[in-house]
Amino acid sequence: MGQLGKRNKNGLTAWSTGYAEFGPQETSIGKIMVGVKCQIENLRGQDVGFLDTGAELPLIGGELARWLGNYPIEKEDVKIVTRFGELSGNVVRMTITLVADHGENLPIESSVLLAEEWDGPIVLGYDGFLNRLRFAFDPGLYAPGERIFYFGKDANLVG
Amino acid sequence: MLIPQTITADILRKPLLPETFWLQRHRTPIEESFVQIVVRECMQKLMDALWSSKQHPTIQVVWLAPQQAPDTEAGIRSSEVKIRQLVETGNISGARRELLTIPKGTSKQLDKWKRLLAEPVIKEGRPASGQGMSLDLFWLQNHSERYKGQWVALKKGQLIGSNESRISLESLLTADQLEGATFLKVGQ
Image (cartoon, rainbow over all chains, first blue to last red; front, side, top):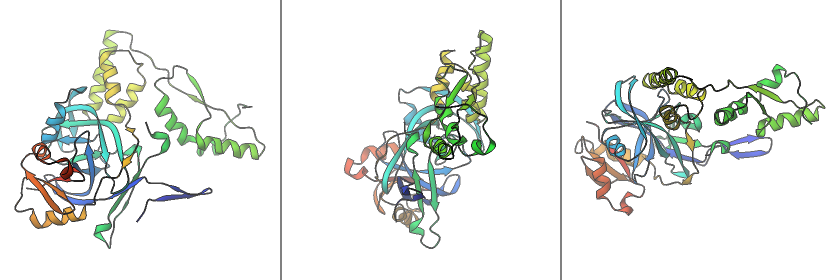
């Protein structure tokens, strides 16, 4: 396996900058099909985030939300209506890094909802997070160990 | 060198996307009502094509809705309420669009929303630190009964540690153990 490329008249250019295995996982909200590894802010360990193109903001719940919320960072209290119901929490700015198995990890600073009462997995939403990336999936139909999430950045969007 | 001319539909179709991106990133600090945009690779290619076909390159004139500060306390308050309502109904993109029409410095609260809801910023990449996922998921399939409701730290399908608390588990592990470790909550 290697990075995805894009063929144009000048030859082949890299399209993705990193890729990693993704997988399903049982969670408190049921089975999530696209779990990808991510690293939250300055935590050393990696967590698994639910890649949800139907969600707007990234969402972090439970103990992690409480712990991250204790940081002296700018935040705003909100009560957001989600398809899982109303959630009370704080909107903050935070860096979530997509973890690659090969290539480069991709850190993204974005708006994040910290909602302690959310018992589900970390949610990586589309409009406030994924919509700035290139991403693609290889479902690994005949080789479950080769379910691959490719991601990359447009050089013009790097902050 | 650049001569304004009528932009045909064919010309408009292709290069619009880069301009849209450009606007998203630069609209806020721009005070002018008119902006001439002839930047980015895609537009340059279009201009090259136009030159080679002996047509004049085009200045694309884009109208930006002028930012207008609410001029009364009630107006400011109304904008703050509107942004909150948009956020709380999950319409983050709507809140972002609304904030673009409000100049910086209108109120502390609105400036705070501008900072909190700014578009995501992709930072420079760092070397990959992941170690795959299938071995960890295989471990979960075989051991989930025993660790139900707990957080487990796994590395290449090996259990590094477990705890009821995600944060405590991280603090119990050494830097070496944490390198590449994945934390998973075992489903109840």
